[in-house]
Image 1 (cartoon, rainbow, N blue to C red):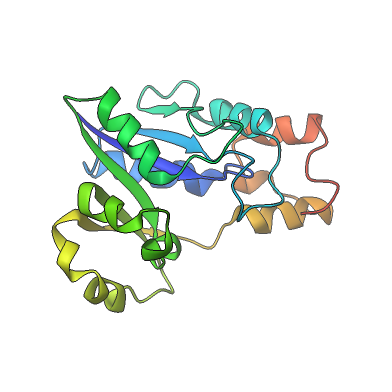
Image 2: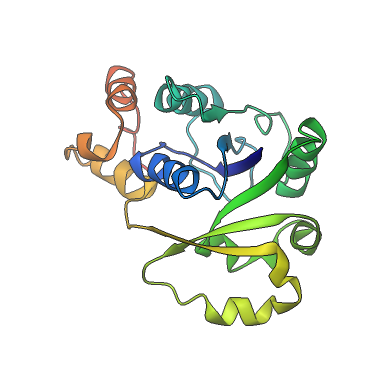
Length: 196
């Protein structure tokens, strides 16, 4: 089985996250996608909703989809880096192929990740393009790792969690960007009203 590990803050998880997962599955890049939300200790994200709420929203988004799962592996009281997460899943699923799902924005600074070149050397990356981003210079930069870099024919549109949080804060309608269960969870728990 080919398993895609989809990391991110998912603050909140939205329809584009789900569409990317389904597109990767239907186009046979992977057979299953596991969403792995980053923990609150991640130093580059200082406005994260608490771990429990983001995990719950992901579970709501993935319920009733047997090819989508959610893992709380990174939700610890210390930072968990991508290389640790990938090592964990490779050990857990020894008989399967593990792929890391990565947007071009994150891929653009993979050399700055904690042990980023270790990640590139030892893992397969599925790169999801942003339609405004020219990935050619990055492929040249990382040409020594080209066998581990798979640029998918899937494009991400400009829906973003940041934009959704801004819209909620400004009392604009966001139902179209979120699964209904996620939208209701945000509404019923009065989330993101205190600013982004």
